[in-house]
Amino acid sequence: MSTLTTPVWRNWAGNEQTISAEVARPNSTDEVADAITKAVAAGHTVKAVGSGHSFTAAAATSGLRLELGGLAGVVAADAGSGLVTVRAGTTLRQLNAALAGLGLALPNLGDIDAQTISGALATGTHGTGAGYGCLSTFVAALELVTADGTRLRCSPTENADVFAAARVGVGALGVITEVTLSCAPAFTLRARERPTPLADVLSGLDEYVGTNEHFEFFWFPYTERTQTKVNNRVAVSDAPLPGWRRWLDDDLLANRVFAGACRLGRAVPAVIPTINAISARALSPREYTGVSHEVFVTSRRVRFVEMEYGIPRAALPEAFAGLRRVIDSLPYRITFPAEVRFTAADDIWLSHGYGRENAYVAIHQFVGMPYEEYFRGFEAVCAALDGRPHWGKMHYRDAASLRAAYPRFDDFLAVRDRLDPGRAFANDYTERVFGG
Image (cartoon, rainbow, N blue to C red):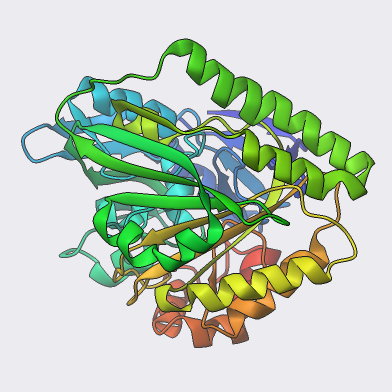
């Protein structure tokens, strides 16, 4: 296990950073347990970090930071049952490639694959699809190292309360070292992407969500236009996306040209509505097929900050109207489109979808541009609609307000009190959202 002294950690967006007293890079669960017990004995707090793709300070620590890049790869796989055990530091990109080699795939994904599997699960990362919960619903078992170095195996039949809490644990219960996932046979998706008037999307939501396996849309502020995307399983890949079209749409337009437009908007805010209108009209329809993870995942290189709220699906029209009011009231302009996705209900205590079908609305702002009034305004809209903030995205909620949003909040805290009474895995963020 290698260590460094007083290095700086920054997240991907650059809005969070910290200096840790020590950094350890364990290569085994035994090394994780040893590092934790030594840090606790020295009076240090401990945090495991993944790829830094969360926009909160959930992984920040001034004590011991555990970087899990050496704890990667598939441990065991059974193609017949679809159960695959993977080490916690494995990125989704690595996992997707490994599963493809086994003839398997995760049943659903978000649109970023840079996160580690443990980081993605800890914050409730999700994709879109009325039949699918967040990625944590695919977890069949997990291994957690607690503050005293104990290796705790958790599943629906073994330490079931810890399992219910740790599948979305926000890093507050211990360090997850292995996860067993229920995977599907590898499959092909047909994607259909097209510009669609906002009014048509909102009036046809039930059909869009109900008749497609995966549906989402992006709305461009100051316009009446969206870009919709539906993904559905098909038997064969009969229309792969040509390389030149992928480069044109996903590299040149979605990243390089969009980055230039954002920089122009940051320098000359008055032109942002015009830029958004041009961007919305520049998008053209496309339809293609491909391996599931290649269709789900897109390249995101333009830096931004983000807030995302899960709300009851029936509340989406009211939330969307509130979003538009907030944007219209701001003293500055918004460059990024809002993203809207949908998930099924689940039974994970701190999942945003616990006990209900959710609509998710994600709002963004280009790095270096003002955002707090925007984010606080939209949060007020969502909080009034029983909204739950994404654990990995920016928000301003505290334990008192979150307790009312999560029916099993106190059950989670009880597990935390039992596993980590000395708060070895606490930091400023967990103290705010869970209390001391």
